[in-house]
Image (tube, rainbow, N blue to C red; front, side, top):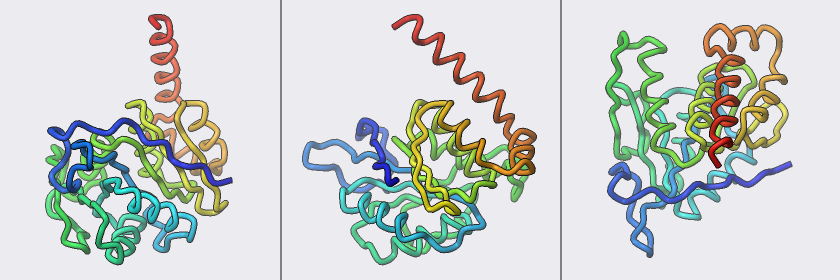
Length: 215
């Protein structure tokens, strides 16, 4: 079942990154979509391509990383869509910026080239985006962490499950837990070791419960 992404409120023009494109007719900056996915996926499914074409046609801004896999595949697709509003985020110099789009370099305190070094860029992408579109192989902890980072900020993510060719929305911790339940035992153990997945989801549920007490 194809589920349409639900954009958050348009960001204030003063806080929009430089490459997000011109203001719309109302003078507001466009909603920003964080597009990312697994390194193992190098070709975009037709459903994902259609979703990205929709995003571009609606004049939303795309914020994206500079990695191999989905990042590079999306960049290749966007080359054929000159009207796309794109900003590439990187740690250090961009590894991929195929369209010579504006770049936002994110400082990282970690060792250059390490996984932690690039995580700072992903965290920043989750901060500036209004919602996410993730293409996931059902294993990669990097993509799973992006969903967690967006969820922790109250932002929805549309997740395309590459192997199942199916879209899911993640807007609540229980929806992410349902996704995690689809992982193999080995992939789930890796996610627990690297991301503290169950613990972080529990913390989010507690925070939401506490927030509802004051509504």
